[in-house]
Image (cartoon, rainbow, N blue to C red; front, side, top):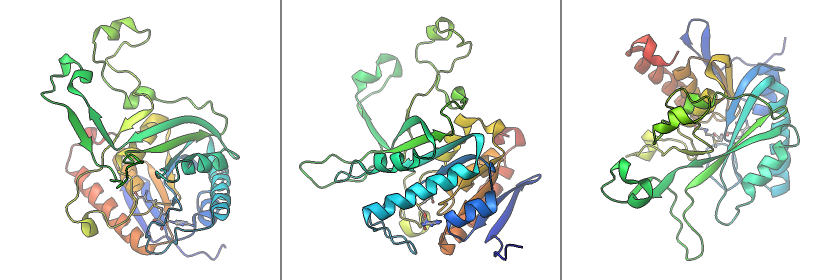
Length: 300
Ligand SMILES: C[S@@+](CC[C@H](N)C(=O)[O-])C[C@H]1O[C@@H](n2cnc3c(N)ncnc32)[C@H](O)[C@@H]1O
């Protein structure tokens, strides 16, 4: 008997599969709820120690204390990650603190091997000329949202990192699961093993936030990622060999929504029960949305 309280929510998402949300500290929850090797994929975005106004967590700690905690988190994740599992860690810097993501990655790198560095691009400008004539752009394109910086020395921050860790750096990936069609179709024949009109997307992922109208209701959390981010991470790892996805800092449940789309078991933790209540609502809404489309289109 552990004497621990049960989950805040357990939401069935298919035969034998569920999203389970715990209102507890991830460092305690990971070993107790997930256990050794119990996570095939971990996707998360921890607090960045940049003074974000979370409802419960205080996001301003002495740098050394914060990094030590991140190191502990890395050890806890390594303890639950399956031998051939993948840990995708999203971290963003700020103009004044550009080393932060790398400091965080280095701490986690004491417990796991950094296998890939992915650049999550939130906003991009593409010149019509650079896109090439075949695309048929009528004008230069600027898409996505960024955090404006009022400064004459810093640029707007338009990207974050997703560090991909594994136990030994040799985990095979399903690169074409998130592949992109070749622009030049002659490459389909030319490249060895291509065989199909898809190539590896590479390590720059353009994923804009959806435009929101009312922040308080449309995104009631100050620091989320879109569900497509964890969805792409799981697809890249291999959705078919992912039995359980885990997010130690689940917030309002973007990675849980991804789990519903992919039909995989999910375990998430947050110390803020109000965020978890929103997460449960989003999971139920996604489940209801998917039930309206034929099973074969649900990506199962
Ligand atoms: C960057 S946010 C995650 C947002 C999430 N990716 C989403 O899209 O909703 C980090 C979250 O970590 C939570 N948190 C902070 N310390 C925690 C801890 N020790 N254990 C679990 N959650 C914690 C905060 O409440 C916050 O919601």
